[in-house]
Length: 636
Image (tube, rainbow, N blue to C red; front, side):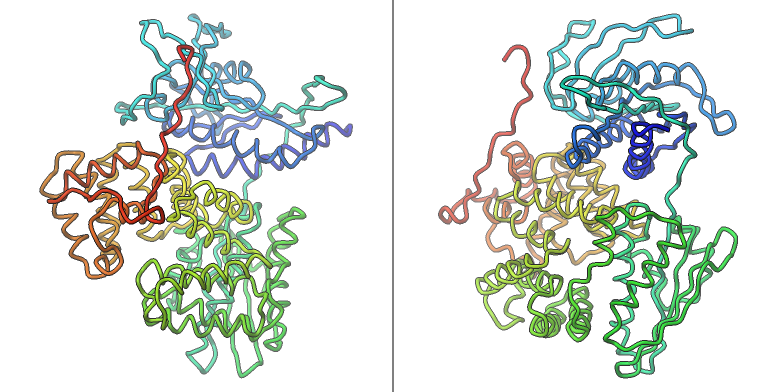
């Protein structure tokens, strides 16, 4: 095989690490890989188009890090119609049309049929242009093809009935039975031998690859001291974090695996419920600074014990032990690490065992999220940075602690005022950049959002996803930022990805999806999500606000008024929120664009007995809202 073919094969393998999970996340099934292409079936054309756009977006970013001679692109064609599942192969005229559309697409582009366009453009609001009528072998009538304009520029094409299709339409729920939406993907490798020259290279057929999925169960605390639970849980959580950084693995999130903490369970049943094949379990016994860690890796498909081991070390060797466990799991599951992943997995942000132990204690208290636990977390996290001033995670955790204390009016429980808490948050975040972690980027996002600096917040979201795209909390952070950037469709994609990664997801994820659906003016769906979020966590007073606005927009005035009354009568909301003003609402829901803000403001004014007071308080408290950019047309 020549060098170019080898490069193409390597590129195709790398691409699957991006494409396969996206297809699964959008409720698709992959069929029949044939050389440099494959077919995926979706239950909804909206899922298919959304998935295709996300694939092209992520691959474009992937190419940014590659030289011109090593860049590759995919063409994607999407059709809607009846198909036949023939012995794990997808056949039918609809498949042939999807293949024809794929050949019409530009490298890095997407072509769709008229039926797909009609089912998706009102919902996803993308720009497009007409490619004309195209003949398809063995199909009597020509098909109408359309190119999705990923850069958002529309050519103002007039449909057959003469109505303009380039305007921004309101999203609507599509009703009716959908047989299948098919997406055909083919690789297009750009090999440059000179300016403007390229060629398409043949690709060998490769066997389908499926990422191994693993759940790490909470290790059992075998110590005589039950106080060591924080330490044992911390070890488990760090193993989950380290393994989730590996793109070749699917790792069950902490919140989902910790549901089984302290329970006698059947590992086969757990694996089935969590969608994993492999289970890693273990135990930790600690006596002073002496540690014994037992591990067991099981393949639940055949019951085979792939690996078991016992580590007898001191506390000072904890990092080496964690590294050995991670590397062994990777080896046993035959996962290949990229150079970047190798560095991420092997990189410990402290070498001080006492600092690490203090951090674990502090983080456990922070996760309990009460004013009393914030005080305990402050003590241990401060102790961690005293022992290691460059401990990145500890500094970031302190920055988050003080930022949240200021936001939640809990600063007094830490012995300070709101202003000092914000100052300390900034100070510790600055220290965290000496050894940056994904947590530091999430903290920066939380600081920039209420400061009306959504673009800066989004820069940190992109960074955190590049560090660990398998962490559901990172996708939730992306969704939150995209909501306020006026990109609710993308926000839905990210929060649903978080839900896929974390089967037992928290109420916050429903709240964020409800907010995104509110931005899409899908009010009934938003109401459903927000009511469920409140049911799961009735203490989060802010959930009532978008619920009240959504109810008001649908004419359910009495329910809307009750929702806003519940918010305004909440004791914590009164401490944190203050007066019923536009500035205070914007501080918690910091929309960038006037159009999105007016949607919330109008709903709240319909729901509340008194309208929101106009923005006031000087330049520090005024939010400068922008007009959302319009998609250009030929008439402009």
